[in-house]
Length: 229
Picture 1 (cartoon, rainbow, N blue to C red):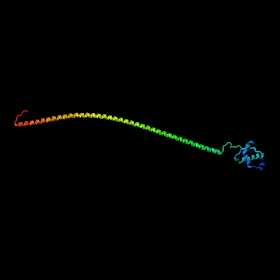
Picture 2: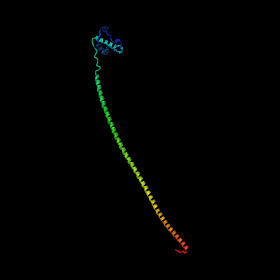
Picture 3: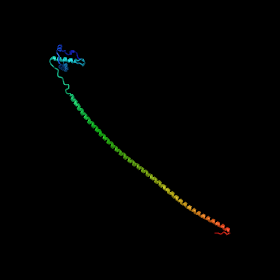
Picture 4: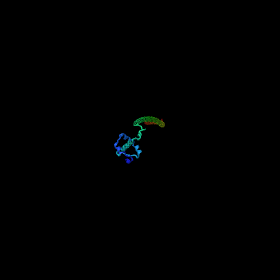
């Protein structure tokens, strides 16, 4: 879109028909048309869809300036002034990337080294704790075994005392039994001997009495008077 044509004075038809300019003048005019148009009156706006209308207007403005006989357009302002050139930007980017990679590598190595040290410390701590735990277990086992030995020895001593008591009681009873047996055996032997003596005496008396009776019978048969012995 553009503003109405009356806002810009048209160039004379005879000038436009009989005079042409090289591309250099047209390019210069195109580069500065915005400044002049802003001073001359309302600006003209256009789009690329206008079929090159902007280029035609710029060409008209250039021809008018040439017809006036002077060049009043100021030189273009440097738009890249103060900006860093691309090659320098790329060099700075590469340098920054290199420094960043070096710093990353350094910090990564530092982190890995720190992690290695921490793991070594954890491993050493674990080993120390494990050794202390084993020592505690060994001491506990030794103490438990000693207590078990003491309990066993106490039980053994109790069993020995009980056995001694029972053995003493048994020996006492055995001694009493033996003494009782010996006593009764002695009495029995005495009774047996007394019985044998009495029996022998009785047998002798019986024998003598029998012999006497036989002799008496025999004397009576022979007519011998009895006599007192």
